[in-house]
Image (cartoon, rainbow, N blue to C red; front, side, top):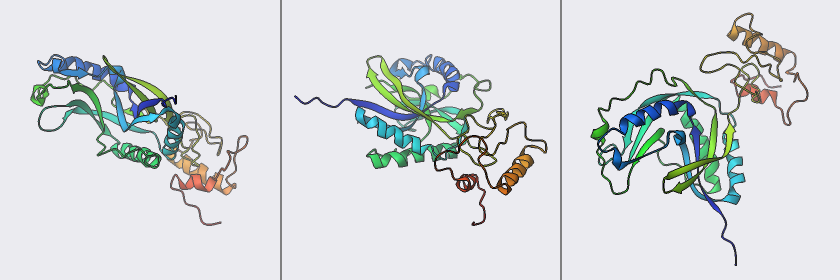
Length: 280
């Protein structure tokens, strides 16, 4: 007898562990509401930002899916989000989902979500309908009618001391198993955005040249142009970056350490950071 292929319920997400402590406090307050028993709260450790729900896919399709997701990250950079406010779906009528909103660089987030969607649609996945970034806190139990007014004046804790700036630099392909006690999420694959040299545009740095949250230099040396972030900056960061780039271009855009990657294209990587050179 032919064996039925194994399928996995999957989605693409951004994990935001920096938000979980605060959102756990928020949930504890919401759980004091008289209607809290009509809600199923998400475990704080499972709270995430969904970029695209894929549904049930054959296990054999996972490699092609992760390959497409890796290509979606090409050209993407790390960006910052911040915590927003409490909200719910739908805006009118009985509440179905209670969530926490996000603010910050939402344009970068939307570009990343669109890149994910564009690479997955050719594999047969449906595009996400009306992407609305949010972190789900709770869902109404089946058959229960919950009024959003019960949460409008909840004494929520201040978010001032929690994750003011949340760096986003990776996406995860998640497996979802629906169990009686709730959904259990298991990471199947994680891909990271490119860390790009601001001098020459090389996209293969191990970490960001400058930390987005604290603006601290990594002191890493770019293997392409030999610029050391935080050290080679005698004239100030911006001026030093520009001068070093000009010198590197004048010296013939040589790769400095070891052998360059296959297909290395210095003009292309400069173009990706907005530096257009005259035709050769």
